[in-house]
Length: 150
Length: 150
DNA sequence: ATGAATAGTTAAACAATTGAACTATTAAAT
DNA sequence: ATTTAATAGTTCAATTGTTTAACTATTCAT
Image (cartoon, rainbow over all chains, first blue to last red; front, side, top):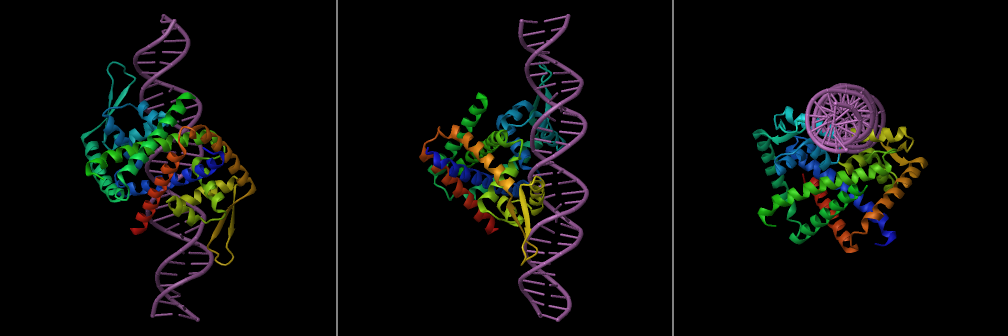
């Protein structure tokens, strides 16, 4: 990678990633905004994928302090979307799971987002999307490793 | 794009984009965090690129309400990083520019981020990066057009 | 058995955000 | 020309997400 190009790449990457994040976020919020914030939606999405998790795990995945997770979890709990259950063997640990209401709400979000994406995704070739997400996931892995090395 | 794949693509995209955003954000914050928040850095970056802009323009670009911009601008102004000058012809308009102090601080941020990226970017082929950013910019344009159509 | 580590919460403070009401100014309509 | 619309920006109150530090409760290590 030529030295002189890094500046331009950084400029382009930061500009485009920020713009896409804000605009995609606004679009998603337009679909689910009355029920959930985007961060709450992401949290439900992760919990739906893994089934059960802990606050520490969420803090690790989302790369924030545990107290930030406590706040989000508390709000989801107040809405009746998640359950907290203490581990009987290690009573420090609290397991988090979706309630039926949480699963239902997540399903509704999923459907709306699915419809949204369906209308946008046709502009891309199958191959282009795969390549894009593959590189994105590679970048993610590099960032994860970089963080571990510190 | 096969119908059955959309769900998986959405899952992968949302997971990876959120993860990268948080981790890259944390990394950048580690470089510039004592001086600026990430949003403040993005704002300076944009102003450095375009030279002069208005609050309305920033609100459009960042896809937030103008009152959100007022708050960010106010904080940057309090730090002496930007100037506000009224348009003499249309006195509703306020032009925003970087002060010398703002330009200097931005340059320092730029250097640190440049060094950071330099260490990460070697893991990618030139072609892979270009393809990735091209697709990202294409996605951004699609989102911008989608918003205009509403 | 004691000291260190871990899981999670609480509290104070701050940044970013929205939405509604507001001021000041300009443009449009008739 | 006067009134009405629209535009640029600010202010204020409320909410969310965030960090840091102090804290409780529990488990691990040696």
